[in-house]
Each structure stands twice: as structure tokens, then as C-alpha cells.
Length: 111
Image 1: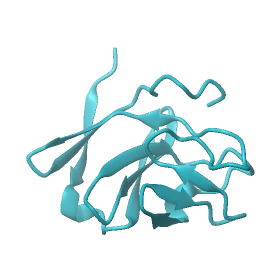
Image 2: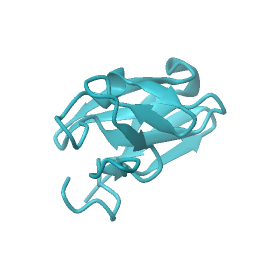
Image 3: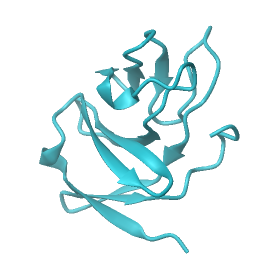
Image 4: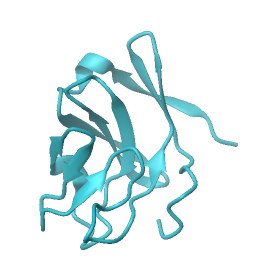
């Protein structure tokens, strides 16, 4: 059974930044966009396993710090012409508290 875990408050993550949550499923990067949307993605680029949490957020995408692959934060899919996927995880906001469900969403079979 999966449980929601508390990540922290929205203000704990800077706009266009990330926070890493260490779980038994691996590290998960929780991102906050400039418009305060929050996304959770496996902290591993599908290309060379670069730490996405260290990348630069552009809108609803993050650039991998190793080779600049762009990953969609909502789906985990690489932006064409690159191919691949990083698992995404459900997030909910309770007041200003960010909650994370450590069961990957469907749609990324290779994660």
C-alpha cells in the first residue's frame, strides 16, 4: 500500500527550483515552476542518468545538467528529437503543504 508523504511547504522550494526526496523507490525531484505548479519526477534523466534536480526549469520543462535534454515535468517525456521518459509521481497540495505519493504514474514503462 502506498501512502502520501509530506515534502514540505510550497515556500521550501524556490520558484524554478527543486527539492530531492529520498525514498525506497530512489530519489524523486519535486519541482516548483514560476507559476507555482508543482511536479514530481524521478531524479534521473533517461539519457545518461543526470540529476534532473540540478537542471534549469523553463516553464513546465527541466533541462538535464549533463547534456541539456529537455524533460516535460508533467509527463516525464523527453522533448523531441530526444526520446525517453522519467517516471512521474502524483503530487497534491494541502493548504501550502506539498504531499507526494511514491507510486509512479502510468505512462513511463522504462522507469
